[in-house]
Length: 100
Image (cartoon, rainbow, N blue to C red):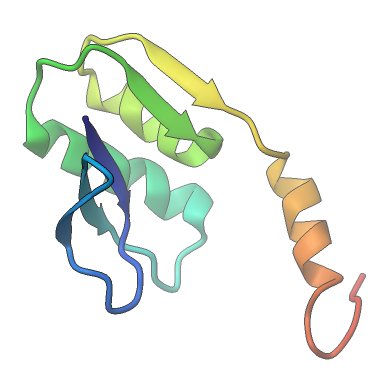
């Protein structure tokens, strides 16, 4: 099993965690994830090649990238929350208080 995930701090780019090959490749920067995640996910998924039994996308941004990659495997999509609701939730958790 292989997981293509976002780069995270000092975590290694390639690792095996609990028997899962973890490839931290999806970079996030100044652009909103709605723009960067699909492109990053598609490019890195294509680079890994084919032979997938199933693809699992968390949130629409990575699911769109996996579809865009055209890997020919079924896609399961995990829906956590709408991007709008998630942003609203995060705004209430900022150290300087809620924002409109």
